[in-house]
Image 1 (cartoon, rainbow, N blue to C red):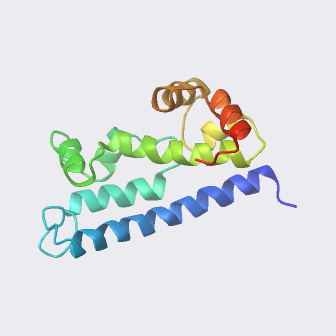
Image 2 (cartoon, rainbow, N blue to C red):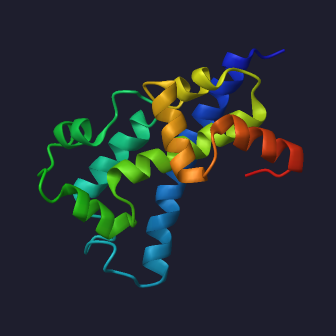
Length: 157
């Protein structure tokens, strides 16, 4: 029988793989729709956006991943990075990271019987309070309340 830690690692790994597929699908949709404003002449996002996406996807659950680290790691002009990223993905980098971390945290809340603190750290938050504040701001409820209500209603999110 798998431990809760093993289940979490399995879900995190699976989600990272899905991010790669998501990026591929984004490119394919842009090409099919002829939406060449989203992609460059070679049929891709600008290299700065691709590099940022690759860094984010490789480090999505790393607690050190933030916009400052990303700009430094990808050697991207700090003044234009967020606006260029938003232009192509309709998310600012911080929102993109949080969106994916919260998506996985909701799945973990519903499928793994472990502490919210452990889940928060597993998806890349540095503290429980940071996780709870972010979760409440985005979902309108504390993680424990959200889990209880969703579990009670039998809904999967």
